[in-house]
Length: 177
View 1 (tube, rainbow, N blue to C red):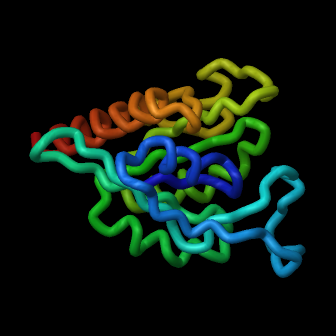
View 2: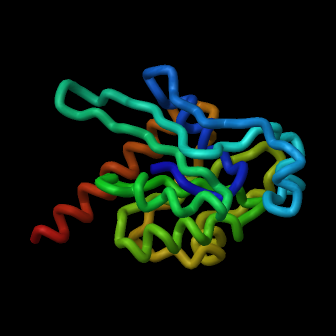
């Protein structure tokens, strides 16, 4: 799963990573969302995900990863349980200009004990904070991986997914011991 707040780059990550044409459920933002979605935080955003995004990555003949991008608005959170069913883990995307927007996603995965990594999507013009400051602000446990990435770049997304899979495997191995 790829989760996070409104406008943090979930659709962009799925789009940049998928080997198939991704299924995107983006719709134009209309005046109907006024007072419901805070579009002021991302003033150039013209569309929003209304169901999910879906993509696929073939690792080898025996391993295929399916990417499910969640909608970021709270009114769509009821769908997360269905998307999380059987998932290996999650990438929680964070925009450091709007840190509070990632807490619901972090809480969701912590409460369900699903492995996740926090990926700081480095938007141009964002203030730089060191990892210790980000970890402290997000109250991340020491075992939660924190990565820096650019959702527009497939190599950056791949590195993030590798970190997630390694983290999920390490947790599975530790639990089996």
